Every structure is written in structure tokens, then in C-alpha cells.
Amino acid sequence: MVRIWLMAILAAAVIVAVRDHDVLHRAGLTGYCTSSPRPTGTSGVWRACEKGVLDGRPNLARQSCQPRGRSGSVEYWRCPARVAASRGR
Image (cartoon, rainbow, N blue to C red):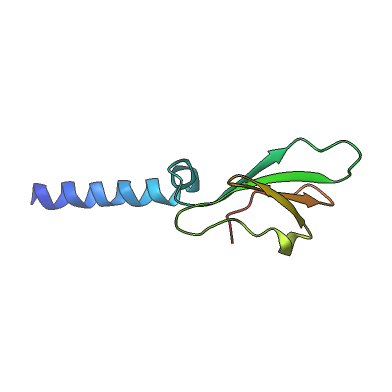
């Protein structure tokens, strides 16, 4: 009976750890965006988005942002206003 309880506690701990989105993006499994310095002569807020293994790059188009190019594995977006944290979908 003790083994069953230990397995249940272990399963609950894994579920809680995985639900924390930060753990998944630090492992490179989900895409994420961070603030980026604004290029001179531009307006708005710029975001740099990294691709994740499971869900690809975040799409910020639904938040009125426009893609502005890629540099290596990073895609840059220009947003007219500050954007809430993106979960990548």
C-alpha cells in the first residue's frame, strides 16, 4: 500500500512540475517570447520568439503584432503595445 501512495505522490509532483510552463520552455520543448531592444527609428514593443520542439514558434499575430524577420533561430515581432506573456499558441 505504501508503494501505491508513493507512486501517486510522485505522479502528482510530475504533473505539477509539467504544468509550470517555465519548466517546459527552459527544456526547449515549448516556444516562448522575450522582450527585445527596439531598433533605432522604430516604434512599438519588440519581441524575440524562440522555437520549441513540441509546438514551434509562438504566433503573436492575434495580439496585433507583425513579424519583422528572423535571425538564426529567433523570430522578431513588432507590437503596437505591450504584449502579455505568450504561451506559444
